[in-house]
Length: 257
Image (cartoon, rainbow, N blue to C red):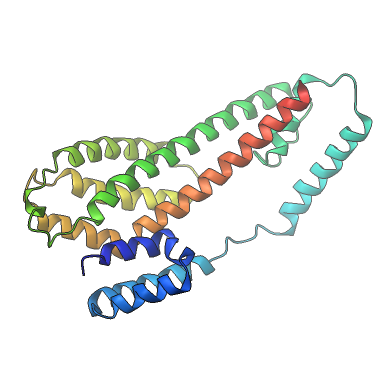
């Protein structure tokens, strides 16, 4: 089916669920004419449902009680008192705590430690942005590969030199990013980068032209690993974290001004 990859991408990106019932039914009827594509579609749908049902483990009551309750009390106390003069170091530390970063570092009386928190926070935000940018660039590259219609008579004439160059650059960035994240507790993103690294390596090693067999291997590997869905999910989480942190920092800066 010509539109098979298109429908699979609709499902992987979450766009299929946003369609009307009539549009969804029309696509399913069209899939009935291609048993192989229908099988892939149903398999991916089942996998996505399992993934959506996965819940991030709750760190426990002690975690929330020792952080958010104390934080809420402190913020309410500061708001009620409305001090005319606030120690700069304490004020900056409170801003970072309010953003939910570096939980447990409530050492207001240690300026050196607060300065370290400040530096680490900036580095983490920059690292999140670098990861999100890498995933977005990789997604764009993979979409062009995955959606390639190998049955098209002109497919064998495509020059892959540009894709290879982009993939080579992304491969270097991925290796550097994995090194920076080697001590990160987020094993999910490290696993995703490892999967992505393998696919980028395959793209980089493509022949410049007429390498459709390798393209099919890459497409199958990407589909089997649900790489597009994983990228979308991880990027969504990263964007949410950055928006939350930057939003809290902006709000605190307005209070200080």
